[in-house]
Image 1 (spheres, rainbow, N blue to C red):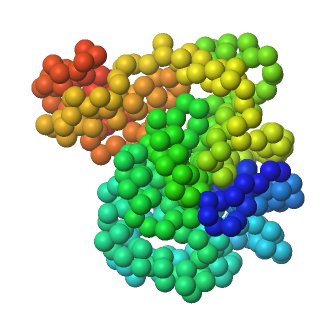
Image 2 (spheres, rainbow, N blue to C red):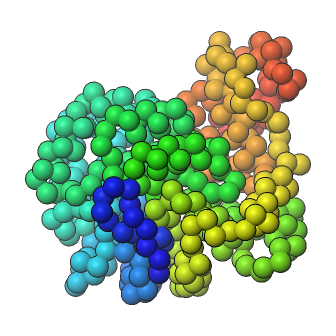
Length: 381
């Protein structure tokens, strides 16, 4: 296993972290974690050098947004001496918070669920610009200062799903240990993207990457156009191995999280991590990733450049974000609102009144009202 510094914390993380959002389950029910199988995977990973374990209040819930079972599993699985071998992270469920005192209540509950008296890392879960403003005004910075001083948490951090400008602003408004962002070779301009990654790293903030395989889409059932690119590569690796290598190639990345739910995945990812050296990909290999991005262009529904000439929409539609989600659904043949980002868009396509003002100013000449109708049809809202 290879290790990298986590920003300015003095902590060295394994470049592969164990994400506890996609653990093996029984009867395909998210709230029914297969404890023996999941524990075997986690313990094998720790025995082979993984020292970072990530969970959250919502993970493995029967219904998304409710209290899940992942934290309880992790608390059990790390009992008996395993806890001392890892850096443990969980997340404050911001979606529920409307009062400052709720922050203490949730942290106390999470410590109990995890069977520990401290957390190595405590993340603000799913920040964007609007949520950060709300949490800041509720006193989250003062809360983090207090629990750090008490020793209940060692380092504060945040996970992010929003716009790059807001990511940069959040980085500047508190002393964060690290930021957790979605990043992979297809999402270099998505949300915080490479711009945010580089900004955080240059500022001394660690960067932990989530969705390096884009929810598994970069590991299996790839479009034929992408498989053709991989088949032409001189060095033969699985698509998952290439995807992980791409993220590890970036020196600003401290670690990446993989939600592993089979021993085959754990073994393969640990083997890949042995080669995860920063700046180790050749120019030819880096060009392959350009070819992979280009290979999907024929599947794109709307060749939107996000110039935002169409904004603001008088009806409140976030046109560029809707088009990006529609493109994602088309490229991967999967309209999952969460994975495409559509569920996090406030100005959904259903707000469109087909006034046509956007189409008149679009430099690309896109039939935007028709595309909004298609988005409603695809995402059902």
